[in-house]
Image (tube, rainbow over all chains, first blue to last red):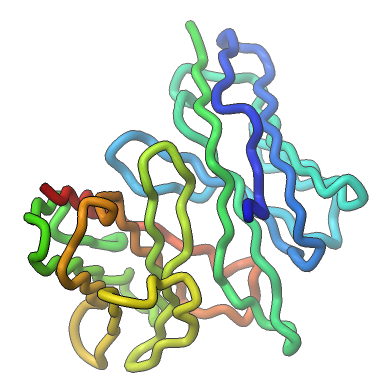
Length: 117
Length: 117
């Protein structure tokens, strides 16, 4: 039961161009979404997040878009740099009835991004 | 300010032995999450603990796995009588609180790679 899916195992992009990583989810209870970046032999590093009350969040070169009706989010990296080459995971969580974050993250399978110089 | 620390980084066990994985959260963090990443898959939630309390263990296998986070010392993930299918990367994450999901990011450690021979 894969509630968060990243259907593209890999993506290859030229340096300076835009990278678009996609993620779909099935559980409509999710209301908080995150992107993590992971290098080999390291733990995931938080990149950017978005609450379900928003449809866009931007931080420097990274922008996350959320389409709730389609249950789809995407991460845009522009311009892409060779140092961005890593595995990117999207993750989702939901608040409990009391409005406080439960914290448990459900991850997608990851997309390997390769940025060529 | 040290990040989340995990040890050992690599652990080799023979079938039937016990594996103990340790996680020291970031200073000031009192919430610990354990995730497992099987080869070619995303991270899967295992257990969420606060000091001296297991809050959610819905992702833990029913047998052989246990976790604790004592008042003093690191969090421990214990796997008894390991089998080859337990071979994976085990990641620990910590967060300061979860009253606000927009700010309480989970910070991950580098992981422990368990190999069962």
